[in-house]
Length: 500
Image 1: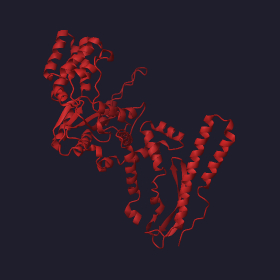
Image 2: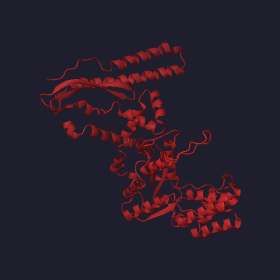
Image 3: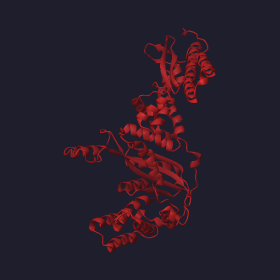
Image 4: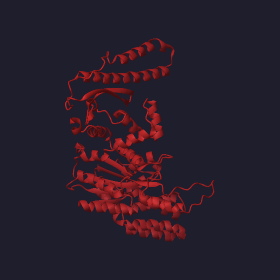
């Protein structure tokens, strides 16, 4: 028995008619209108024409399905029934009609669903991509408003769920993708790794267990206090997002005076800034779901993929956190690779400035000159000499104990990390000594989006958005979308199901 659908005329007649109507309107009714009104009318009309074209295509496929032979894998006693479902596309909602072959004791077979890769939800792949690209930069509410301006209506909760599903193949994408051609670099090219962390404000159920327990302890002795007083920062509503970056970079030998020169105000510089080699093949990632050890392990796994024989120089730029340094060294030992760990100069500057303010009584020209002097010493001398000079400077100034504490903090910070502060050797070898890449990644992947005023996150939602932003920042978004659609098709229409 062959199914029967009522014949129809040209499936694209409705689109052609609307196009003709729009042209007639432009010839007559639009003659007295301003360009803005004409533009709006044509834009809306073009969307409707496109929607009718997509609808006409699905109607045509439904007609061809009626005329096609009995599908493979369908039992002879199967009963065909006409079914239809909605599909929300980037040009509007269309109705997809197709045949469902039903047989007692067997699953219903809809051949056209697999042929057109019909999604499991009402939203098309184009809508899902639009939603994710909006959520990558805006809050959920603003994203839905922007999509509505494009004629795409997606409620807030559905938008969040679409982002989570869209980002689910992130790990598989990087695990399965072929090695890029530009990954093949010379053995003299540095392999640079860097990691940092940034707090993300979460919903009450989202922080880690230790944070929730600390919040519960503090909540037992809460005093409301003056309602007009400045509000205190919440101490236990954040979860750390671990950010990692890996890239290739050509070595660049520099002198200490070049770096010290760039610490001066622009008007006082006597030489222009030298153009440094740009990072190549950069891959950034961030996670709020996984812990620091897992994130750093994934970073080292990518480094191992790029340099499996350990022929290149591996440089790890970190911010000085002790646990961070320990995990980095443990991962290096596990892979049997020697890494050069460099403490980020920007973090060192923070401690030097605190000491300078304490010694010179505030932020002033003298404090700035003092900082430049000690940066120059750090870049050329052993750390023990710099630490001794710091303490001697505080003693000669005869500052108070309270102010001397900042100097001691700086001295102890440098002393405890002396093995990571051999800047003179790093400059001679052409290694990077600052973490501009990872700081930029923290800002772009985490702070710029997840730090929006009033934003509160679930673990799933934050993880999905950071994955999408990481793919966009790494230049892999288009490739990932193609990969994800293939994975979605395999999940929705596995070979065994198609053959059933």
